[in-house]
Image 1 (tube, one colour):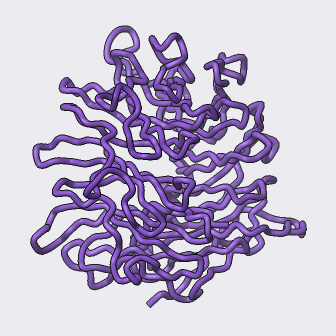
Image 2 (tube, rainbow, N blue to C red; image 1 turned 60 degrees about the vertical axis):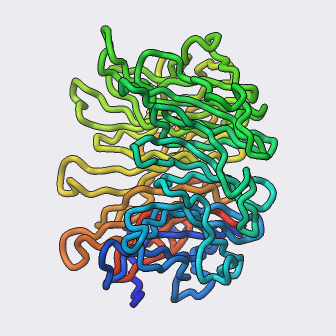
Length: 501
């Protein structure tokens, strides 16, 4: 059933250069698969071990079936267990029976050898299984062999809250009694889209969007201790991070190294001269819940051009600040309708470091639609940016590839003399939604979904991967083709991945 295909990238000539030695940076990848006989919304989750040299481990010709009930298992999130294996947290939507329509969060533990460890591999462990609908999990390791997960909970009345739970390596819930979760954001409004940042003491900071009765959105935060206690405002309410009358959303955050977090988010102006404009803003919040920049009265402006800045992604810069990558869409002029990728670096005090703070650094501005940016931090303070590029014009119009660029700590582009991005995956298929991971050797491993073009494979979806060095050199198959993680006649998509070295 799982017949494999390899697709030429046709995008990089190595000129006989020596391939660098590869260190062990194995990756566990979990992904959705739609069986051919699927009825009523049945979706399963499979898993593969991708080794550092680009070969497949465990049973190389057969993926591990992680979840294959008659219901829909979706949106896998992968967290390394520190022992060469991983936890996979995912949504389970009941498609039939007594609980039809309900959605829970469940998890399974994969050992380093590919063995399913919980319940003898026969069924997952429940993470969040109330009568409400639990969805949109985000998770990270707890530093003690388990993981912490935050998620949305929706009640029958339409209320949406953000909750969290901690699970041990044995699959036992660690917070509260009767498997009850920690309450992170619970109010008459709607809390959505949680983001997790470790607090350095076994707990987490949870950032999320809060939608009020009037439909406006703010960015809020709460700290949950290692014991599952909401620490700020006596656990009664979260802290308002954004503090403005505008719409704030699309939050991203990194640890500040002192128990707090550096935060970036979109801000949409709702009134006045700039009504409808969207900028990228930033703020810092301490481990005690104090909002720092500008006396806590307003966020700091990170990016504000004559267009729309959106979808920020942040990483720590190794010096107490953060590097922020975001989309920029000009609204007028020659390049109106393009989408570029820009970046800025901000220190721990909120000061912009590149171009004297007067403008952002252009990471990818190739006259197309560049989207879905991801940043991979490197040990020297630089970073690799990975993103989608869609051609708007010419014979390749509509094609989507994955490209990359490396930024120095000073905001300089390091690949191709800074003149253009490096083509990472440029087949005739549509390469989408890259997931980028640090490979431990100064480069990155990228896992993506490839959608078949017109013709024999039209509409098919596969999962591919590639590895790129810090010099921008593709390392697997001499840079001529990607590694196919999943390439059967089924629909394989939406991979989650984690390095498990």
